[in-house]
Length: 327
Image 1 (cartoon, rainbow, N blue to C red):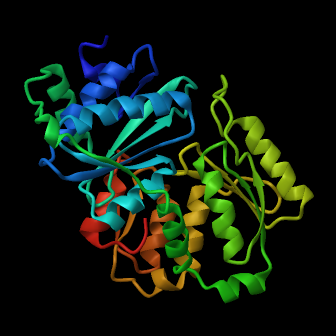
Image 2 (cartoon, rainbow, N blue to C red):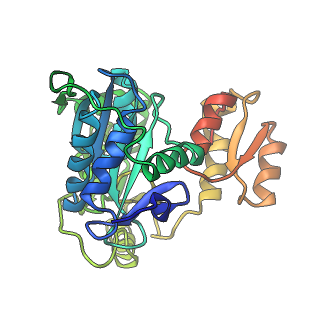
């Protein structure tokens, strides 16, 4: 049993080997600590990826948070962006998401999200760690009649897909007759992205949309990326996209199966996106590791720029504070 939760703090996120280091007992304790931050009868949203270890730790967390009198909207398996959307859509007070690690296959991480759909900052995580290290001093327990309720909300995925479609021009997309390859990395993205892309008029070749038991190699892997690239070339597709397991990050491939650098993508949006071009008085947010060439390109195009640390939730917080047009 971990005595100091700080041992699981990896750059502002709680991550550990499931069932050995990050145990159900720890997850339940975290749930009761997190739940005690809310008022009785407030509501949060919870979700996870497909893996059994994420499911186990999420259920343990749920018992802890319900014991504090907090209600739960349960998305079950979902993408991380869907969880963020649901928090704002239902006016929830926050949420949590459990997903597999990106570097080590047996790791599971938990992300805490506030009422605005923004991930907790490092200081916020530190407060949870400190509360755990003095457990149960800061935990609130309620009478049996006040224990939180858990409610399934399966219809949210359809609402999410319809909402996203409102941000694009279907006529232009259909006219372009685009074809793309999407690797969903055996995650919940497979239930959303193929439907969304197809509905807006794009022909889509979907890979790895189903559940697969966790393997020794995390996905996307070198082999899965190479496979996607080969299919892009063989099918004469215009684009390839590889998602991570929770749908929060992507790798983009061009029509030759070559990776498109994130700086090239940034320049592409700044140069051609009409909404961004009409918002030159608004700031563009970037991390501090962009090249001087990109920084100069942004400034030469007339945009204020603000560079921030690439910490959990920091870019999203700065978008909100600066009313940024892009990040």
